[in-house]
Length: 258
Image (tube, rainbow, N blue to C red; front, side, top):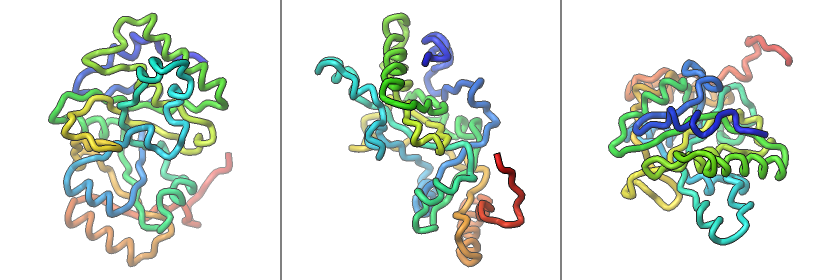
């Protein structure tokens, strides 16, 4: 497996107070989705903050696999992970994610686009470098190691892998995941530098303008009409946001078998 771009291809667009995306893989009009508890959604709307968790604190123990391939203590120290991320996906029609993130049937899904997400986070109080890209799924440890090596070699062949303290190779190493999770069709928003005052033990908060971000909020497909009415009222009256129930289980909705 090889990187689709050399280091220059990434660094050319990796700018302060901007969001890097590879437009060949992730068009700005592409719709993306984020699942979360409804209470957390309201909290984020209230304070205009988004939580990004340290990637090695996520449940999958194989996040950032480079740390398992270090040959000595110096290499391991060099791989200390200060990358924080938020997970998104490219479809709302996923039974698996509703059941994982909405076990109590009370979660919600934010619908937006790549462009809207970029616009919503571009006004940070502190200089930040953001990276938004699709996850690369690998079949086994050997394939993961091959990809880790190809990314690490960027340091040898590219003189500008670090800009203002931001290491692009660490960002790329945070986009590798096992094929067991391929059903998530994941897109990751990642950031490396953040103000020390914003850092928590496991993550950080960034500023976000939800009036620019949200196209609509989608509720669990299993909720009843009373619940929908209640949540619609909260989002419409307090935040001027449209809300609907997912039609994943709607028998009047047509579908195709692929």
